[in-house]
Length: 468
Image (cartoon, rainbow, N blue to C red; front, top):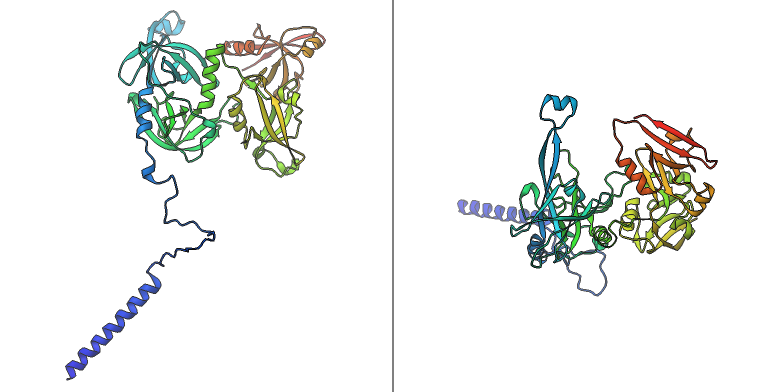
């Protein structure tokens, strides 16, 4: 009897302990049930138990885009001939030396069935011979049709007896952050390599101190040496960029890469085919991103946009009535947060194209149409000078003298008072146009002293020697 009572007590104790344990688990550890509010009222919460439309892994299929792209991406071999010393006599006295062939490789993208190929300018620079190898291992000699160092785009042509697979251009302005993309190229001579990633940023400027064009698409698709000139495509197989650069201390991929937007590459290619060179426009302003300014001192509440600090005379901005202090917020409905947004969009335009700017003037929003003109100004970075080609008024003021007008100068030139004068020669090479200026600067010898020849409105000349 006593044993039975003891067993009953133990059973009752176990039952109570189990109930307490189950209750504690229910109260403290078991997750709350999902409650579905089956009403017609809008809920302020997103039901995260359901996949967001378009983000189901099964909905993202790279296979069709990859299969089409690999056949349109080619291997580019650049053979350059260099001459170097072969003896101590050659080394010390610089006489002769044997010619040596150096081989560089990269990628390219077929953009038409008759064999036009777009690649990077740096892939084909200084080439003595260019060879193209298709995905089917057929090899052709290529002709350089034209190139633009500013955008790093070049156009090649191969002749074949059959139509080639090619990629259609997509609209890079319509790409979105987070959009899936594929990078296709030949890294480390590994042909037909496909990597995937997303668009991480748009209108990326890698060096804000450099006045040259920079407005890249940034992606985390793996890109390595040899990928340059290859394709960046969306999941529909449309070409949205030409892979161009990586930023890395090791020279290899570290998490992000950069591509020239397809709208810019397409415009450069069309210009080369139609005009033989690239038609560059300039809106005609000098300014800065608002993030780089003391907006409180300027009395500006905006934090995004471009502040116009100066209007270049005889430019599209000047003719349209833009003013110092205006803030550019949009161009043709596209948001402008920084200068790279503006320069990137303008790189897809030609002289006489008409754009619409949304600006803020004294806090009032205005829409101003601007007719873009051919770029007639140029920043000579090595000299710290900005110049422009002469207008009819300038020619009259300077009695029909030839040269380019200095419109801006760095503080280095403050005592020389060069603004408003003409630059008529660099190292005795005449500078009657922007092209002359570029040519003169490209032909500088780093071992030779540099001089510039200046002309003022009185017709007086002054030669200035510049020490390195």
